[in-house]
Image (cartoon, rainbow, N blue to C red):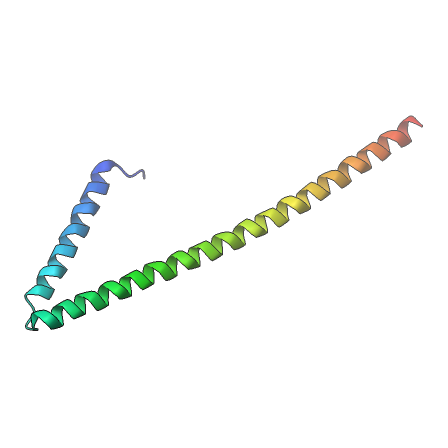
Length: 96
C-alpha cells in the first residue's frame, strides 16, 4: 500500500510531540537543573554514538554487498566469454 504525504506528516507530528514530551518530562523532573542538563548531554552523546555506529555498520555492509556484486559480475563476464568462445568453436566445426 503506497504511503502518502498525509502519513508522513502524521509521523512527523507524532515524533515532534514525542520529543517535546520527553524534553518536558526531563525539565520537570525532580532533579536539579545541572543534573538534568548532564543527563540530557549524556543521552544526546549516546544517541550520537548509536547513529555513528549504525552508519559505519551500514557502510561496511554496503561495501561488502558491492564487492560481492562485483565478484558475481566478473564471474558472469567470464561465463559469457567462455560461452562465446564455445559458440565460435562450434560454428567453426559446423562449417569446416
